[in-house]
Every structure is written in structure tokens, then in C-alpha cells.
Length: 234
Image 1 (cartoon, one colour):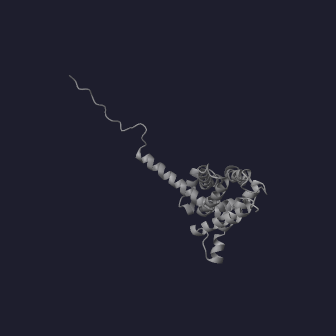
Image 2 (tube, rainbow, N blue to C red):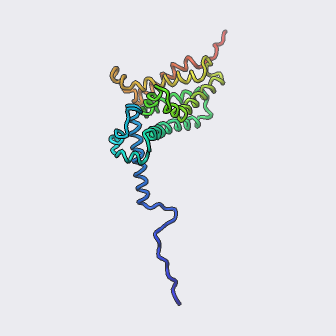
Image 3 (tube, rainbow, N blue to C red):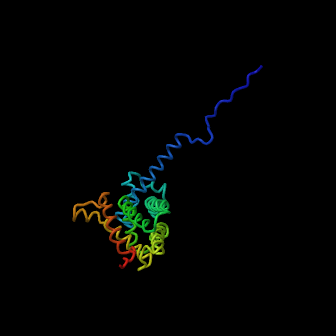
């Protein structure tokens, strides 16, 4: 009786990624992420026109050809850097607000103020880049507005519309106008970090200070915008 021959294992396992390929993929993802983080920093400091692939490569400790391996043009690098830097910020804010579906519109707006200020302090490069690109119209601002700013503005406008419709917020101005007042009040103090350090010796990105600023914005704005019940006459 003959014993059936045992087939030698081929070493291939369906659905399993070889370790070397996995390591290479991980390294590529890390390199691409480092390029985008560096690009975001460079674009936020010197603007699109002032930035160069060579400087991004130097600061990111990679070669210019490697950047072109991932991105064909400087515009592609710019867009990918913004997607990586801003897309997550807005998605995080929207996700947090969805969890507050049973909370009053005013409470949602106050939450927006606190979270928005924290996000600006955590990602100053993102918001500095937005300000730079907002200085002049053009295809970059058009793309930035359609892709990232419009969703952000829709989010806060909806909160304001809900608060006004409920009668909890005064309708003395259109929602878009109120939104810009709130965003401006949130942004300016946090964005003045360098000036505040020079003038007052304080760091506006320190959690205690930015939380105090959030409380001030909420108190100052909502004490004027929030409707109050008429006192009962005796």
C-alpha cells in the first residue's frame, strides 16, 4: 500500500499580507504623512507662492523626487496637506455635534465655541493657512471654500438657524452674519499668540487661557444675543 504524497506548503496564505510588503506600506504612509505635515507648516508660514518643493523636501528630510513620487505638482501637495490638516478638524467637530442631538440649540452653539477655540489652538497652522488663502480670490480659495469652509459654515449656520427658530436667539441679523461674529470672536485672540506673548507675556494656546477666552466669548456674545424672558410685573 502506497502512502499518498504530502504536498509541500507553498508558503502562500490567502488574505495575509507578507511582512515585508506591510512594512514597506507602513513606511510609505509615514513618509507621505511627514511630507504633508511639513508642507502644511511651510504653506502656512510663507503662503503658496513663497513655498517650494525644495524647501518642503529639505524640512521634511526627503528628496524632491520623492515628493513628486506622491504628488505631481505643488498644487497637489497643497490640496493634500489641507485635506489632511482641515478635513479631520471639521469632521471631528461635526461628529461631536451629532452626539448632542438631544441638547438645546443654544447649548450646541456654546459647545461649538469651546470646541472651535480648542481646535484652533491645537492646529494653528491650519487656520493660519485659511487666513492666508482668504486674502485674495482665485482657484485655490474657490477649492478651499467649496471643499472645507462651506461645510464648516453650514454647520454653524444651521446651529444659529435652529436657535433663532426656537426663539432662544435674537434674530437681529441673518445667521451668516451672526456666524462670522462668533467665528471672529473665537479666532482673533487665539491667532494673536505671538503678539500676546510680546505684549503681555501670555501664551493664548495654554489650555487654561484658551478655556477662559471661550468662557468670555460665550458670556459676552450670548448675554447680548440670547433672548431673556420678560420680568413679571407685580
